[in-house]
Length: 417
Image (cartoon, rainbow, N blue to C red):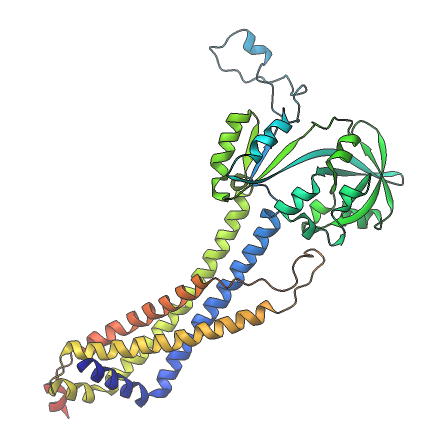
């Protein structure tokens, strides 16, 4: 019974100063709206940038790195001293993964592995008249690349599967094709590191969204690339592994390095700097949103303080008629939480609507062919965080004024009147 009475009294006090109440609620609503919009947009942007990198990056990459020769000549004289002279170059090392077909079969049987995509990398020159442009041809298994790394999404013109069906075909980086002024269906000539010149037919453009990569990188089938560099079908320079759980990548990279005696790199190590940038952007978004809520909390604090000064008579009468200090405290806490709940609920609604508006704004750029609108993340977690912080902030804003109201001595107030 007393609980319902406290709520009715809080409602009467709120409506008695409805303009100030409305201003406080609008402050909370604006803070939550901006919190939801900003966080949704920034995390959506992070997801988009992650997609550009992560979609094309294997969770674990097996390869053979070029390393310095450990058997230096000076070590032949003594092994008990430190040596700082290095002279023998890594000229005899090979970049081919030994026994690659057997490793691929073994990985495909691993229940932790979603799929495996072999790759052959070849350094070439694109011949443009009398000028040679540096390039890299990646020999890929087209079907595996489409399934595991969304390769077809990065081919805005042409068909990725044509690499498999059209002999001696190539998908050029968009920036390289523009520099060479080559259209789809035309032929280009490339010169390999062995000095051999080959003619390849352009069947599409590849566009990663990173200009420097698109100026150099292009794609052929594995068989075509192996033929270009004069290598057998067993010649593989990279084995790209996609896992069911990306978090297992560091541990599995160490395991594969030990088991297959080859170099292994996990996606976390390969993109450590990029992930740091995403974390910093998220922290900034949270910081700005929480700051807005704290500012709104100070507004509620000031309004409740003014309400106490103006309603001292009412508070004195309440205490004189039997209401305890705790009851008065609960009345003002109810007022604060009501403002937070009302403003926070409308903030969630307007935050969702503004996010929808941003999500439908066209964002068309030649550098990002797969992106059509501004990216927004609608994760329910952010809405839960928003309403939680709204209630916590408004509760704290009403805590000190409510304690102040509970200590009012009704005898002094009434005697003064």
